[in-house]
Length: 206
Image 1 (cartoon, rainbow, N blue to C red):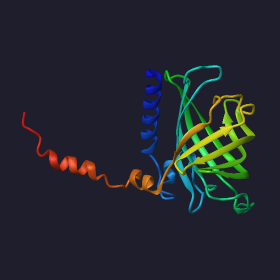
Image 2: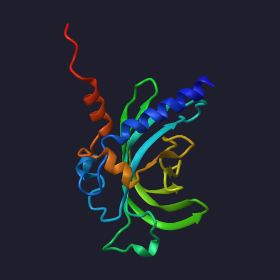
Image 3: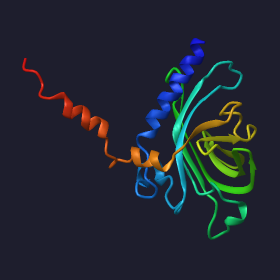
Image 4: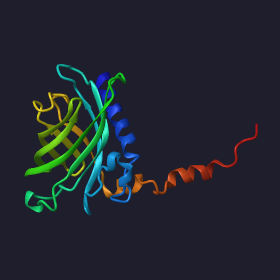
């Protein structure tokens, strides 16, 4: 129970930290590393990666993953894309062990959509992508991206292609709503903080 509660606490903390430096559609795209999200076009979807992965052969959580993603495939089909309007899914995230060691980064790009399936509240987008690894970019990695109830994203890579680097479970994250983007943008007003400051009054004299 202690380990489970600790995992939940870490996950919530990651989600809170990741949400802060977000973007507001194309206006704040510069906040993403390496221009992540640039050129996605109107109606694109953005979100955070906030996941805990179990290492190969491990029985307990081993890695923390945190980062951002952007895509133009949500609510689209394969026929919506062509050579002049290609499907896109870009993700950039850091990966570090729970003890704070072995920190490194990964980038997912060059996503090519091959299939879309809808089941209940989950839409699955399958395709091929390039994933950066320690030895360099790995091309044509079978990738499955699921959007669950418009709130959660899961990203799965073919374990054989990435040498099971991300563990046995998918990488999870959040789908930002329009309200999320507005609230966390740099120009968003923070009424709660303003109210607190207004009610504090002058500092007591020492």
